[in-house]
Image: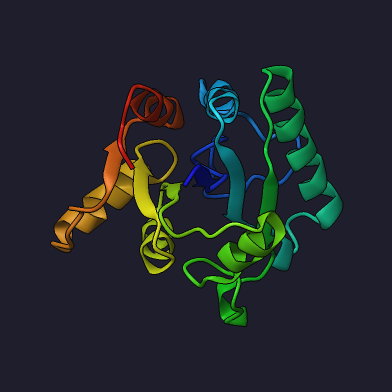
Length: 185
C-alpha cells in the first residue's frame, strides 16, 4: 500500500488554539512541504483528512479554507510534489456527524475518490483523534511531536494507554526520512 493520509494543522502547517483563520495565518511547519513532495516523488499517494470546525464556528468560510488549501497545494507543487486528495469536516463536535475524526467519514470519502483502501496505509497526525481514526480504519498510526503532538503524547502516557502500534517522530520531515530510508510497512 502506497497511501499516506495526513492531518493538516499541526502536521503540515503550524497550529493555533485560536484556529488558523486565514491564508496569511496558514504557515507551513519547516520541512513539511518538502516532505510531502519527497513522499509523492517516491510514489506515495498523498491524502489530507482534516477537521475544520472553524467553519462551523463561523471563524472562516469555505472560500478562505479553499485559499489555504490552494496555498498548500501550490507550495507542494513548487517542490515537485502533489497532494492527491483533500477532505475536511466543517462541523463542530456538537454536530455528531460521521465525518469528524475519529469517525470514519473522511477516510471513506478519500477511499471512494481515490479508489483505494486505507487498510495498511500510514496515517500521520498530532492528536489522539488521529491515532484513533488510524486504528479504526486499519492504518499504521504515526504521531508527530509538532502541533499538539507533544501534549498528546503526555496525555496518553498519563492515561497509561498503549502506544505500541504508534510510530512517534519529531515531524513530518522526520517521518519522510524514516519511510524513505527503508522502513517496512
